[in-house]
Every structure is written in structure tokens, then in C-alpha cells.
Image 1 (spheres, one colour):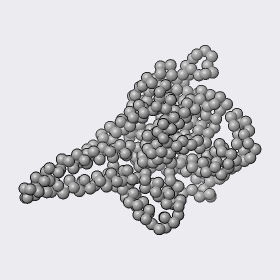
Image 2 (tube, rainbow, N blue to C red):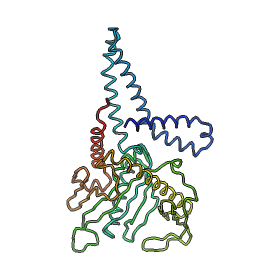
Image 3 (cartoon, helix red, strand yellow):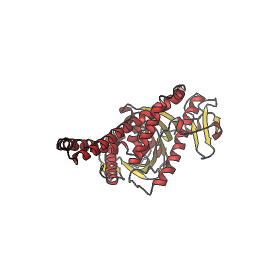
Length: 357
């Protein structure tokens, strides 16, 4: 924890210097990227500066309290309880701010929803999850943008990528990654039987442009005509884009805009995010033996939640939470679930890191 905080403060101070560098100021795109990253780190870094100042003051006061001057001892002994109380409060705030690791402060993420087992019903459930997250994001004032989607004839989604931007969006949504399962009677079911279907959600922190080096030689661009559900032709111009990254084999397609340039820009955003996620996953795997959180793996194959419509029930399997308010949750009022997950994570961190001393 201390190492992570030191790294963030060091990076923040480096960015502060860059914001005064004439070479950075002369390039608007670079300045914008530096300013965004600086802003994302500011909350943690400034608190950690204050934390280090408090530690120094506590050390100084403790030395004074052991000194020979009775007036100075009395003054120091009076200051120490308040200084330690302030330090404890800051430590608790750090635990909250660092839930989710080094990417917790990012204010942009890509949310991917894919239909899993269950055919058309799974695609309809993927649409329901999209609506749930969209409502939740909009209620919090976040910007939501569809980067790519693959709709079905019945109105569902085989897959959909959303770009979400807003303060705390990644920290708030990061633990949604995994398999979401639905139990209900499909609209197409004539006999009223309950079916079980699934969709996979992945929440990926979106990197700044300077964090992922991506040259045109690193990927192939294929241009083709966009098509709708069931292969229905949408336009006759080759506006759709498919990117194939040579080194990783990652393939990204985007066909939702009529403009080829817009589709290319969106596809590049998704590709950079997936490359960053791949890099991040490798680093996490190296540290996996050091810390195993019940809710922090982000494994797409892990079943995390069940939405049971006949019983009006939502169950999060990671923290053994069951709520009988499915209607509210599927409508985007996710706070009861997300707050419970974050509190569970806080307790894990407190057990791991212990007290401030």
C-alpha cells in the first residue's frame, strides 16, 4: 500500500513538472493528456502529501514529548492525539481511494457486454444489462457513448461496447466484470417455462493515449460495408472498420457510424483499451499469489450474479448478498449492490493492511 502511494505521489509530482515544461505546453494533445492524468491522481496524491506531513509532525511531537522541557512536553502531548486522529482518518480514506488498485482513479472506462449461453434470450438479457448500466451512468451524470454494437433481429445484442466517462466511473463499476445469469420466462416461451441464460460483462479502464504506443504498422485495417441484424444491408459505402492487431491477435470491429473516420477512431479506442487490459492482466497475474481478493479478480468466466425474475431476487454470489428488489436494480438503481461490494472490499483491505502504524 505504501509503495503504491509513493509511486502515485512520484508520478503526480512528475506530471506537475511536465505541466510547467515548455515542450509539453507547446503540444496541445500532450498537454491535455498530462492534465487529465494529473487530475486523476490529484485526490490521492494530495492526501498522501498531507499524510506524510502528519507523520513528520507526529514524529516531531513524539520527540518533544520525551524531552526535558516541561512546557514543550505538555504542548506535544496535547497535539499528539489530534494528529494521530487526523492520520487515522486519512488512512481510512486511502483504503477507499485505492479499492481496485492503481487504476481506481481513472475517469474513463470501456464496458463490454456479450451474450452468452441462451441464444436469443441471452441477447435480450445483454440488452437489459446495457439499459441497466446506461440508466445508472446517466443518473450519476456520466457520459455514455456506444462504441460498437452487434444487434439481433429481436432487439437484443450479441455484443455491445460502451465508452463511459465521469468522475469515479471505473472505481464504481470495476467489480461488475464476470458472468451475469438470468432466470425468467422468455417472451418466446409458449409453455411458461423458466429458462436460464447468461451474459458476460467486462469493465476495462481506458488508458490515456500516451500509455499505449500504437503505430499504424502494428495493426491491419480492413474496410467493409456495414450490415444490420441478420445480414440486412445498411449502406453501400465501405464505412465499417475492422482492426487486427498483429502481435496480440486482438480483432476489433466498428460499423455504427456512417463516417469511416469516426468508426476508425472508436475502433482504435477499443483496441487500445483491450491492449492495456492485456498488459494489466499480465501484471496482475504476477502479483496474484500476493493477494487473492474474493471480488477483485475481474475474471470474465466467473459467475458473479443471478437475476431471478419469478422471485424478484438478485443474488451476488461473491459476497453472499441477496436482495428482493430486482425491478429497481434492473432499472439502474444499483447502489445497494455496489455499495455492499465496496464495503466488503474495504473490510478485505483493512484485514490485509491493518492499522496505520
